[in-house]
Every structure is written in structure tokens, then in C-alpha cells.
Length: 265
Ligand SMILES: Nc1ncnc2c1ncn2[C@@H]1O[C@H](COP(=O)(O)OP(=O)(O)OP(=O)(O)O)[C@@H](O)[C@H]1O
Ligand SMILES: [Mg+2]
Figure 1 (cartoon, rainbow, N blue to C red):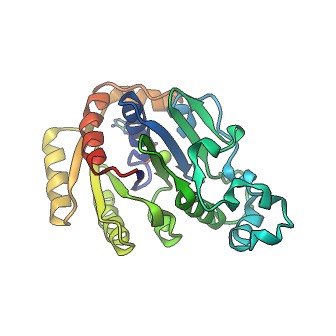
Figure 2 (cartoon, rainbow, N blue to C red):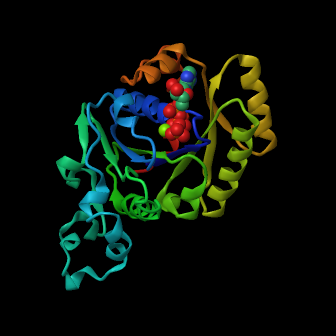
């Protein structure tokens, strides 16, 4: 099953990805986290790794070559990109070269690419690579892919979600976040994803959580759980350390439980 975690900037996408990944791993899944956010660097730290993996963008020869290499007939094979796994129709998780992955205890992390220099151009090639990589990724029954999307909705324009089974929208207590959730819901439905649900995050009280759930309900969006504001989460993120979780660790359990019954290999 491939799950994409989307939402407004700062709503808690990376936090939710980390919570879900840890919980799924504890449940015996082999989890692959795909860092598809070209701006923020810190997901690897939240997940407890000490280094970012080499971005997959390097594997395919860098940004300039990506669009060309994704559309070229590789059988003529003149470029070094022809040697990469991106040529294959399907990619197994175990086939991803080790240097492009961080790995520990059934948790793996790959990163699509990061914008690190000014004037290096837009992130569209990363969207293309994300889309193609996710499409080709073929999973075994006990494998779960969780994608940390860039903030906002541009990834829908790039078709990154084409092969995604389930979209999870992270909603924080703000009107902007609700409005964006509504747009994500309709964009996801527009490309045929039926399983689109929301998770509340940073709720300061049950009362606020109930109001948010009501607002999302009016927009036709089901809520599958709530992570309250958790000072442990906030503190570890401020310190740039692995995600420390208090109450959030318990709260994510039900969310994963709601996501996985619909799982397909
Ligand atoms: N449940 C929570 N309780 C307390 N703080 C939280 C919670 N969830 C997220 N935060 C804090 O909110 C901030 C943003 O979280 P996070 O980086 O996960 O969001 P994001 O949606 O991935 O952001 P971006 O759009 O920049 O990638 C961080 O400081 C994080 O610690
Ligand atoms: Mg993030």
C-alpha cells in the first residue's frame, strides 16, 4: 500500500509520516518512507537517521537529465541513466541501491531530491521523478510506502499521486488548513483516488478537535484520528533530534489501524 501524506506547510506532515512509520514498523511492516519534499531537509533526523540519503535525483543523472531520461527509449541506451533501475518497468524495494537509502530495523528512507542552490531551477523534475518512482515501485504484502509530500497542492499538478492508494491530509487548527484540505480532497478525487481522509494535528483541546472534525465533515472529508498538541514532539523538532513522542505515540495507533484494513499489496 502506498500512502501519501499531504497538507498545508507546517501542519505536521513530516511528524505524521514519522509517527506512522514508527508505528507500522512496530506492527511488523517493512516501511519505506519517500521524502518527496524538495525544500525541507529534516525528515531523516526526525526518523532517527544521521544523514540524508543520496537523493534519487543523482541516480538518474541530476535534474537536467530527468525529464529526458524518463521519456527516452532506453533500448538505444547511450546515456549512463540507461544503467539505472529507473529503466525497469517495476522496482522492488530491495533493488534500491544501498547508497540511495538509509535503513534500520525495517525502516528505510529514500529522498527524491532537494533544492540546495539558488538559481538551480524549479522542482518540476523532482515531481516527475517522484511520480515515476512511485509508479514503478512494486510492493510485497508486508511492505508499506509512506510519502512525505511537499506542502500545498502543486504535486497534484505534477501527477505525483497517480499511483497512490490512500491520501492522508494533515489538518492543523487553522482556516487555511481546512480550506487546503478541501482542495486536496477534490484534486485527489479528480485523479480517481477514493481513499482520501484527514488526520487532525496539533489540536490544543478535544473541543477544538470536535470543531475541526465538524468543519471537515461539512466538506465531506472523514477524519480518522487526532494527534493533540504534544510538547515532546515540539521539543524534539526544535532540537533537530529524532522525534520524541508522548501522547502522540498512542494516538497514531488508531490512525494506522484505520488506514491498513484497506491495504493491498
Ligand atoms: N502534534 C504536535 N504537537 C506539537 N508540535 C507539533 C505537532 N505536530 C507538529 N508539530 C510541530 O509543528 C512544526 C511543523 O511540523 P512538521 O515539520 O511535521 O510539519 P510539515 O507539515 O512537515 O512542515 P513543512 O510543510 O515545512 O514540511 C514542528 O515544529 C513540529 O514539531
Ligand atoms: Mg515536512
